Amino acid sequence: MMSPTITAITEQARRRGRLNIFIDGAYAFSLHASLAACLEVGRDLSPLEIAELKRRDLFESAYQAALRYIALRPRSEKEMRQYFVRRGLGQEAIEGLLERLRAEGWVDDGAFAAFWVDNREAFRPKGRWALSAELREKGVAQEAIEAALDPLDEEESAQRAAEKALRRYASLDEEAFRRRLSGYLQRRGFAAEVCRRIVERLWREVERERLAKADPLQGE
Image (cartoon, rainbow, N blue to C red):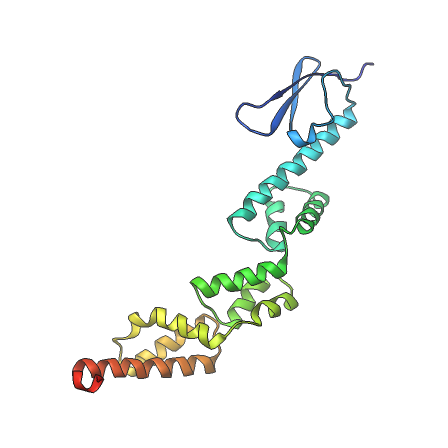
């Protein structure tokens, strides 16, 4: 029995980088162009070779999809593992993909943890406790979490978080101001003592501003 023979290789019109493979005059399957370098018209392919090409193509497709997913924002290894599971990949393929992504620097939990902390600092400051909990949920090891949190000045972060929220509390009486601002900071994982100092500091500022508005001469 003759082996299937490649009779044509054509580029796909709508998907750059993919080739259509025709066997014995009929369309058989498509491949990433990078996987087709060894193919040429007239070459015979055994069923096992065809199965292996299709397997490698699925792997490459999953890899390219993973890069697009990571391009949205860095991902932890756990996130990538969950992503591959959602795509229906088997354990062997997942481990192979993660190994490749780690080797190429696309998946690095230490770098991911540093990114996560920096991003929170820039856009939504949180305390060490909250950040540590978030990173554990992402599957990051404790050693990497501690390294990412080491440069963090929690009091400075709490100050910035409180200043962003100050407007909504500035008109409250002292008891409500202290209770609500303290609760706001604690919900963001800041230590109780840090919250106490920040609330005290900002309440004094609010008091000074109120006095200055009531009697402009006192603000001078």
